[in-house]
Length: 440
Image (tube, rainbow, N blue to C red):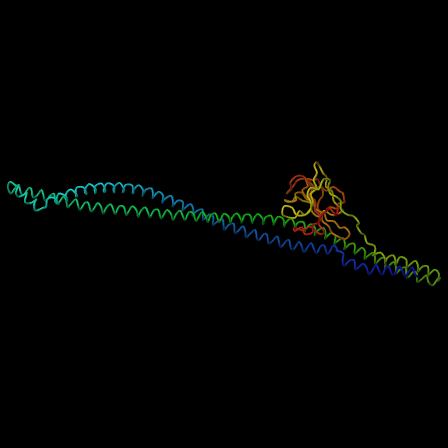
C-alpha cells in the first residue's frame, strides 16, 4: 500500500512537471512560427530593395538624359565658339586692312599738313593785298594780269580743297578707328560670354557626373543588398521547410502517443474488469490481481517523466590552425573563426543535424548550413569557402561525417574554412552568432 502511494505521487509529480517544462522549452512549432515571421520580414525587405532599385534606375535614366542634353549643349556651344573665333579671325583681317587704310590716311594727312603749314607761312609773310598789287605791277598787259589772277585763284581753291580733304580724312580715320574698336569689343564680349557659358556647362556636367557616379554606387549597393536578402530568404525558406517536417513529425509522434495511451487505457480497463471478475473467486487471488493491475498503471503514469536529452556538443570541423578569431575585423563583425591548412583537408559536421542548405554563394563561396537540436536548443553552423561539398539540402548528417573539402571560393583570401555558430537560426544581421571556440 505504501509502495502504491509512492508510485502514485511520482506519477502525479511527473504530470505536474511536464506542462511546466513545455512552457519554457522551444517547440518545433515555436521555431516554425519564428522562421515564418523572419521570412515575412525578409520578403518585405526584399520588396523594398527592389522598389529602391527601380527608383534608382529611373533616377539614373533621368540623369543620363540630362547628361545627354548637356553634351549636346556643350557641343553646340563649342561650335558657336568656333564660329565666333572664325569671325574674330575674319574681323582681324578686316581690322588689319582698315589699319593699313588708316595708316595711309594718316600719312596723307601729315603730308597735307606740311603743305598747309607752308601755305600758311607764305600767306603770313605776304598778305593778299600785296600779292594783288604785285600782280598788277608785274603784269605786262591786261591779258597777262588775268592769267596771273586765274593762277592765284586756282592756288587758293587748291588750298581750300586740301583743307576740306584733310578734314574728311581726319573724320574718316576717327570713324574707322571707332568702328574697329566697337567691332573688336563686341566680338570679344561675345567670345567671353560663350567661354563663360562653356565653363558653366562643364561645371554642370561635372556635377551631374558626380551624381551619376553616386547613383551607380548606390545601385551597386542595392544590388548587393538584394542578392544578400535573396540568399537570406532562400535560407529561411529551407529552414522553414525543414522545421515544417519536424512539426509534422511531432504531430505524428503525438498522434502515435495518443493512440498508445488509448491502448494502454483500454488495457487497464480490461485488466480492471478481469480483476473484478476474479475477485468473486478468491479474495487472495483478487488482491494479487489488483497488485498486478496497479504495476502497469504506475509505469504508464511515470512514462511522460522520461525525457530524451542529447548530452552531445560540437567538435572542431577541420584540421588546421585558427588564423582569425571571432569579433571585429576590418571595421565590421567577423561572425566566425577561420581554420587554415594546406593540402586536401576534409571538413566534417560539428554535430548531428540536418543540412538546411548547400549551395554556391557570392560571398560565402561553396557553403553548407546545418541545423542542430541539442538539449532543446536550436543551433545553426555554417561551413564556408569550401572547394566542394558532398551533402544536399534536407540530408541528415552525423557528428564527424565529412560534408566537404576546405577551399578558397567566394570572398576569400587563401585556402581556409570559415566556421560560424549561431544560437538559433542564421539571419542576415548575424545577431545570433557566437564565438564557436568555447563550444568545441
